[in-house]
Length: 124
Image (cartoon, one colour):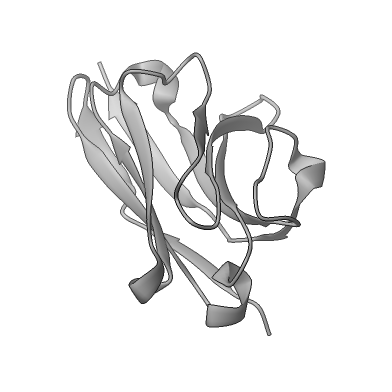
């Protein structure tokens, strides 16, 4: 059974940093890209970042570009989302997801396995 487990969320002051981790079963990360999405209260889930299966290609949303980075450690079957310069608007539940292909895109439909999410709260 495919599993994706996020961790690393928490409460942080504006300007602070957090690193989210997404640990996956081996089969999920074998040849699939991984993405991060987030959902704030009362809002639709939105794309944050994605990385190709080999780490060679990354895409970040305009709202986090320059502050967040995405990386992959295939030896640990883990994808990281390093979040710096956090803002109250970054408050959301963050989800990782496994793409259907080697490179994921910005649409939820391109991902078929999802984690349960981890809460990130940024205070002003």
